Each structure stands twice: as C-alpha cells, then as structure tokens.
Image (tube, rainbow, N blue to C red; front, side, top):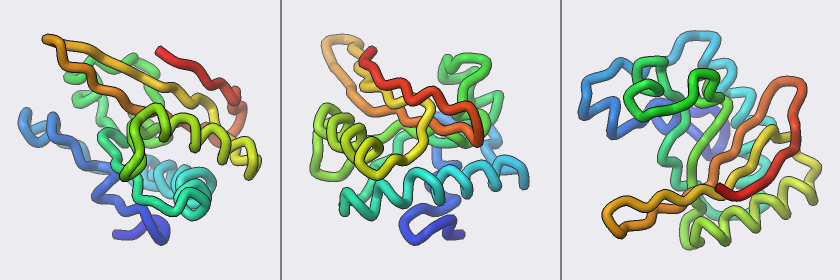
Length: 144
C-alpha cells in the first residue's frame, strides 16, 4: 500500500533480520499513522527535492525486532518515525550532506539526522539515520 507517491508500507516493515528470525514486524493502526505522517511531512518532500530513490535499510521495528538488532529502548524506529537509509547513486556521506542541506532549505522539521558508520571484521557499513517527532523536534545533526 502506498503511503505517499514514493513510499510504501512494504518499505516500512521490510527487515532481513525479522524475516531471518521469523519476527512479526506488522504495523498497528497507530504505527501506520506515524509512518504515514513521517512520510508525508518529511520523506516525500525530501524525495521530491532530491529526485532520487531512497534505499531504506530500516524503518519500523517491532519491540522484538528492535531488541534483536540491539536498538535503544526508546528508539524512534519502534514508532515508525525513523529510517536508516542512503540515496540511490550517492554515498552515505553525500546522502547526509544533501539531506541536511535540503532539510534546512525547505524548513522540514526533523528530530535527528545522524551519519552512522559501523566496522566489523574490516568491513565498514555507512548509512544515514533520520527521525522526526510530531512535536518537540530537536533539529540535531551529528556523526557517530
């Protein structure tokens, strides 16, 4: 089901970890509403301005999935108000920079924009974390 022109509920719930561990990652009505509002207020305006698809590695995480991946207890992913992603054709660093500039230029509300990097066994994986809250957004941006 489409949330907006460029975002679907399949993207919200897709998780290789949930599939592998057979964890239920279905959306409640409340969580679906959060995903819709996040997509409408933040993701779709970004996507339209940037003009390239988002490659989403994590959006919604049920509590069981969040525990399985080592997420924080109060993770915005558990409310479907955060995504981890890159933009097609761009590095994670380029994604971070263009998203930050676009958020500022279009005055799009956001809670956190984080450039994240993780190295395991000599392999480095990089992505961008973007979160939003219905109220009380902190407009934080930093690198981990």
